[in-house]
Image (cartoon, rainbow, N blue to C red; front, top):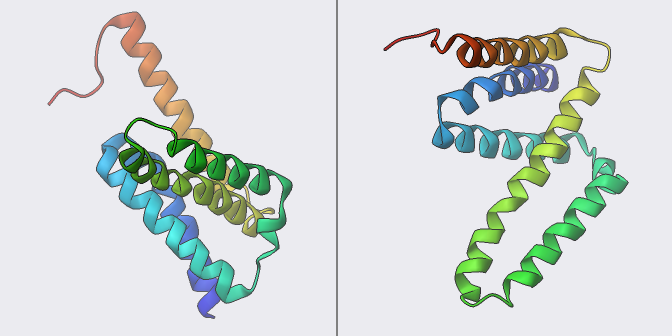
Amino acid sequence: MFLKQANKFLVYFFSLLPLSIIIGPAVSLINIILLDLFVLFLLFYNKYLNIFSNQTVKVLFLLYFYLLINSFTAIDSELAFSRSLGFIRYILLFVAINYVFYLNKNKNNLLFFLEYCHFDFLCRCFHRIFFRKQHTRF
């Protein structure tokens, strides 16, 4: 029961990602971090740790460790190292996206919603480029 509700919450939370990116960088950063933490909790709770044995995830972690090692050769290595620590959220976001699509491999609702958001964004961009108008005026 808990897993079913948690997976539904994860899908709804993941669906808010395009909206949070449009709202602003702080909201999208908070959304990505909360999504990553929630997926990590679900992965450890379900004991579904074989997603980390995926070849792509291994390559991403290898690139991440290369970034960490490379940050020591910078002029200000302490600042470079602290800045490069935050990039792990994108690797975990990739794992979260894979996990969400693994859960919903037979459901097309999530993919349809994301495609609709992408299409709507592209239409607004083309309308603004060609007609030099904005859809919303504040």
